[in-house]
Length: 263
Image 1 (cartoon, rainbow, N blue to C red):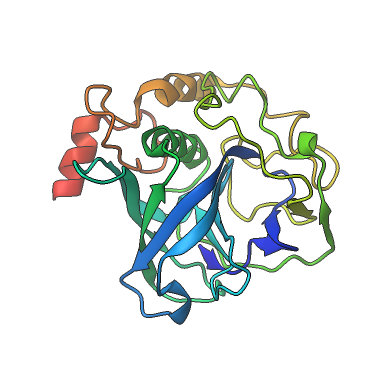
Image 2: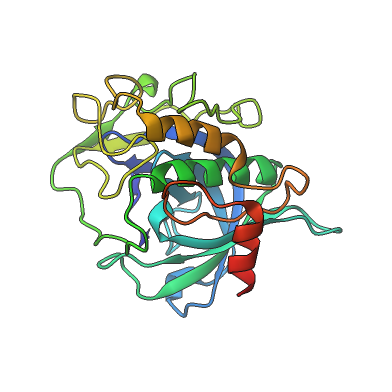
């Protein structure tokens, strides 16, 4: 994950081939467990769930932390909490990318002031699991590489996810119906340095990510479609979810995830 690398012209900067799955305009982020100056204080801004990561953009242009990237490959111990007397929130920790403007790891707490923390958390975990099928077990976050070419504003079809979803999983679009404001999404010519929910196959044309050819479904994709519906959380306890390890042959059960977390 990287600090102050995912913003441009008061908007979000994404990779070529990266789609924005969900968008929330009213999110609070708190960081702890790391002494980096930019992490101090409560941050107000926007949260984007993409096919490859989460991205936070601050609404305060004077804020030292303008943006923060949470690649799926770098996140651990993610849970959705439901306190009795305050808003639901998502917490977890994320490891730094080499050259990502900080070192080590940092813990985070995301509060969705307009609601939707549970739906967002579950969607993020499903997207992370689909992406994990294309990652090596235990892989470290790759070094951050700044865009080598120009970036430019993208029209909405260029960053919207397919309405039919991914491998049988349809994200909760009704819970997050809003779209990023006009002229606030910018795309670089660089593809993501880590796999997303559809692997590493990107549609032709720099920056275009809303449609186009994808890897033909395979037997593992069929398993992933089934896993996407049930592998991330216990339906009887929807407030709790765990980031699964990279996809192997079968996704872990809820009990296996709980046992691993407790050990």
